[in-house]
Length: 521
Image 1: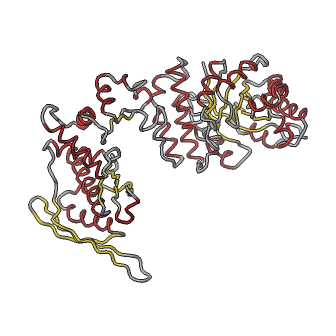
Image 2: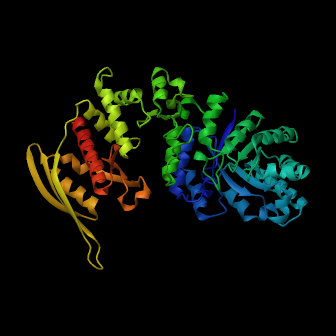
Image 3: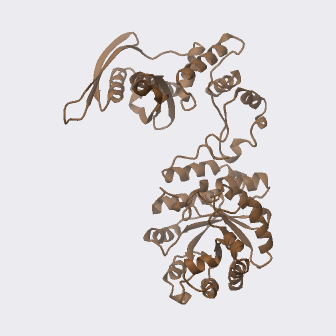
């Protein structure tokens, strides 16, 4: 077995832009526990009030898999371990495990700690002994170990031997600067593992883009604990990514660190951590990214429909993800058949419907449309191509006026005339801008006929200039994401007129949302 040690709540928070509240950390803790993580590093109780509060609150959780660890450093130079307030905070935090970081590199001992090499060895040994005497298990993080080994091999080994003598339960070799390459790292581990009796672990950073590879090779070399973070979040270029390490261990190396059911939670946990961190979930990350199993080329999709193994190294459901087939100018008939089946649209590939739909998509993409993030517009297009789409209303005309007076906020007004169920509705509405005014006017005209509009709201609105060389007359693409509290959907429009592009995406959004509501009735 290989132990999974998660430091998302400590090392992961050192990523620029991440700051978790205590409640955030507790929510993530529960998710990591259900994922099957063995150890969760909750933070440094001596460093800030938030971490102190976390360790108080986490004891109230009923965790079934994980044990929470507190992080800290060796005692300060020149004092006894019992006099170090940070160590006392760890002891009183209520944890069973303390993870202690110490210096391996003589350069750091002299320049950063400004102490003697022998004093550093004493700091390591005395700190671990003191915590062990207080009933804690101790994991020792040998900071900068691989750089230390390359700089002064003898002293680097002496530091981990000091931890070994003190009774450390694990000694974790850290590639703190992330500069060690896989074969070099493996060679060092092979030379070191017989120098101590304590089982080893690995803590890799990703500054050379090899943290996952280093962690997997370390396991091959006999380490029993892998440390990392969900999505690889961490300082600089991040830490070893547990979202990749976990499935690689189980599915590629046959190491059952988690169960099959726990593995199915992986994608959900990855995206949950991103959302709590207020970061966009990683789109192209292996295993858990939204595009990890996305297929665009027509030849690929044709083969995929015959057997997914042709272009997938595993079934996406294994890690809780899903397959996604995209449509674009690169698509073939297989892409459209797959999407039609996904959306429940009956289409006969022997008649002209499929060819007509494919030609239309390629023509629209040439004009600037993009359907990869606009599944609702694509579904509407497919239904129109098969004559199975019924429009809910028709635009008879509209006028939009924006007035800007000196010193005042601009005010927009939209007047709209639409035909609904044979009736002409002529109305107007104001808005914060021309698109908002148009949206308000359209809703005002349709609400009497389609009450479900009350539930539909805007989630996101994006405008992309397609060719900046055309200046202010450039064609733009508008992507709108809408929702109703239960589902969300994307729509697209493209034009040299931003209002026209917005109208196209807005109409698709409203019609799709109304039809969703009608289908459920």
